[in-house]
Amino acid sequence: MAMTLQGKRIAILAADGVERVELERPRDAVHQAGGHTELLSPKTGEIQARNNDLDAAGTFTVDRAVSDVAVGVICHGPWTLVEAGVAKGRTLTSYPSLRTDLRNAGADVVDEEVAIDGNLISSRSPDDLPAFCQAIVAQFAKPRTGAS
Image (cartoon, rainbow, N blue to C red; front, side, top):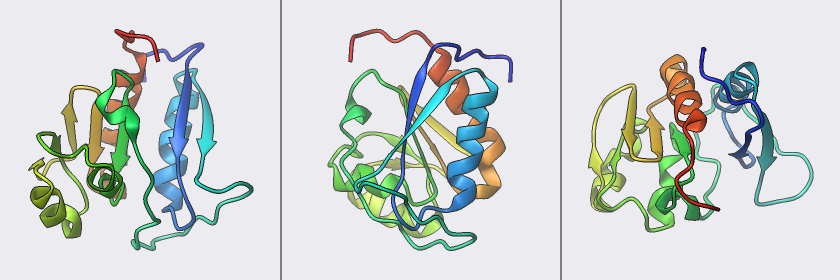
């Protein structure tokens, strides 16, 4: 990936039950592009990642989805946007079982590897990780328009 994230700090939000590959691959892509990651979780200490377990890991508010800060969500991650009340009017993709919930929350749902809606990048599943990682690195490399 040619984009540089040198000097940028990227927050990765995760909770118990996160799909290991959906945490590690984006983190590695950010590191390879020169960025630094910090893992944020609703609880302190370690989190328990899973391999090939598609159960949702829980939810937490994503205030940044409505600011100028880039946000990436994959697989079941868009549920956090529904719970935070920020999915309405956004173009999103997700794991197939979430799409009805996204539509009911007012999102414009597409079935694509990656959906980019302003600062918000969404992806369907671990199969789409190469495209997702490329998209988040490109988005994180863009200059921010405001202060947060």
